[in-house]
Amino acid sequence: MDITISLAYLPHTDAEAALGFYRDTLGFEVRKDVGYQDMRWLTVGPVDQPQTSILLHPPAMDPGLTEDERTTVLDIIAKGAYTAITLSTDDLDALFERVAGAGADVVQEPMDQDYGVRDCAFRDPAGNLIRINQL
Image (cartoon, rainbow, N blue to C red; front, side, top):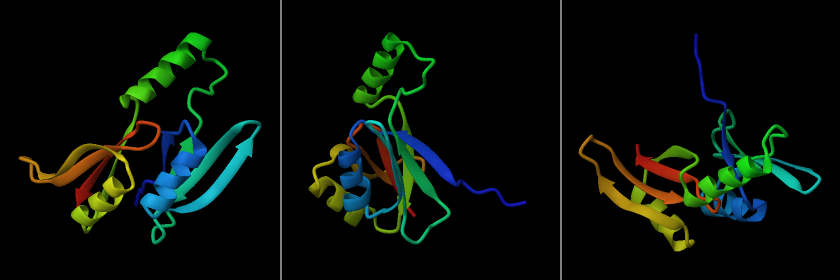
């Protein structure tokens, strides 16, 4: 039995900024762009990996949330403490330079970790923590 990761969810607070980051900076393709009222859901993923996607969604839209709860979620997202994802690349330094050069919020420059991984970290426009490991 094979199990793969098909879809990961990350909130976005600005669909155009999310597109600029995931499509233009990371080079992901846009697979779906769905709007409803004043909200947008964006599905993006690596061009050569059609089976793996990230769904960028409007946060705190659950009708069961109170306004206070919605505000709390948005505050946590703004702090960058709500969600995270780890990506991998075969050229960490080049990708870091591209992402940093595009103005991303750098959390950690590329470095060799004590636990055997070389990685870096930054935040996307919504504040989601994005870690990138060297393959």
